[in-house]
Image 1 (cartoon, protein in one colour):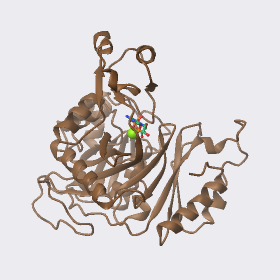
Image 2 (cartoon, rainbow, N blue to C red; image 1 turned 120 degrees about the vertical axis):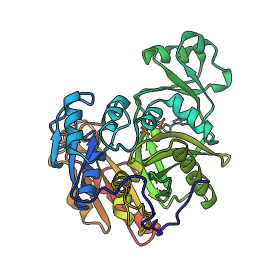
Image 3 (cartoon, helix red, strand yellow; image 1 turned 30 degrees about the vertical axis):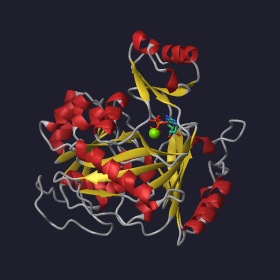
Length: 404
Ligand code: ATP
Ligand code: MG
């Protein structure tokens, strides 16, 4: 059985498999997007220096880290420099080549490890791991050849064809109702390795963020309920308003088994579907902090980024406690444009949103807004869930965001 820690409990200072890396050391992160930026914030708050490896000179994390190594993920000199600077290394992006992490791991502790990240990079391997962990996932077929395409079972249609690798935010996906549509969708996706998943009748979507340390101890954030629009996360609510406590606990147990089975060290997010018949199905996992966990910065006493720092430094884990019900809205680049596609003068009306009680605005420092680009998020905390919903609806209205 996986050891669980009740919210609010700490693990004390029991034996650590890795020696504790004390504040003052430099922590490295591969990838420089918003997840790395929020990791850098957490690390710096605890007194660590930070090093970011990202080719983009204006990457959100590179802009604020102590060191910014501007190179590709597989650049041997850049990786050597990151290892020279850092006492330990983490990643913000699941598509960092597992080879880069394996190279770094020859010199420094790397969390999560390359083998676990490699499984998360491939939907087919990921689903196989869910099944090994006794966690149900959607009925599916792996399609890597014309033969496998022809042999697809009829009962998987209608379905969603997803590229096995490199998909995110609904990219690399096609909904298909017939065999003819499936064949043309596979061709349109470049006939690369894909997974066809049966289209499931979703009632709700939830996600669970767990953190596991090298000793196998696991803590988790409160369960998030998520709303997606166009395949992209739009709204996260905590506590999850529509999912019974027992089902939430099943999701936490499942995510913990998935992490334990990987021998995982670090922060792992598992997305689940709650089906209309009440059953729970794992969708996918991300070997890093997750968009649905951003609320934890403002609504929990320990955030997912604090946990990322603790896991990689061998610090005691500490089970996060939700201190305020909250709702998070993703702020996509669309907000910077009006209905005709013209740029809004002065950008979104942040002052109007900041006038609302419990509004926490996070912008990632990206200079160029584009439709669909994640520019920031807004978390509204309140004394009650009902109040958080009322305020966040007002915030959405003031920003011209679609209500929900
Ligand atoms: P992200 O990286 O943003 O999580 P993604 O591109 O990896 O997204 P998925 O999580 O696989 O994509 O799917 C995006 C959304 O599409 C899901 O959150 C869900 O709303 C819907 N979806 C995916 N698979 C199914 C399915 N089998 N049945 C019904 N809906 C699905
Ligand atoms: Mg997803």
